[in-house]
Length: 127
Image (tube, rainbow, N blue to C red):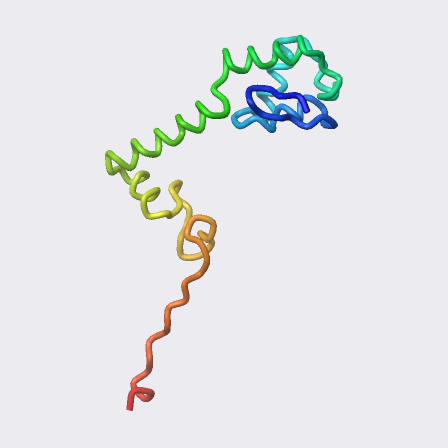
């Protein structure tokens, strides 16, 4: 497995797909990087030379924010929003959807599993 920017990319995948295993590198960025260096995107990761791997790694670390620094930057942005107490920060604190999605139904990813609350008892049942 070739190691690029601290991530083991899979051997058997095409390099344009293998680069997307790096956090912060999507399909478009992957193709941009390969075009800048002049590597065939359909080449397998195991067929890359050490020189090509080092050129990919230097280009990614020099021109793009990826992996650890990107995760840190996102975490700092969320912390800043929470600290200033803006609407988005409060939604992060409460664990609710941040970008305006509905919460009456379909917010299970952010809210977690259902917490069933007992329904109101009728007057007849109380006698």
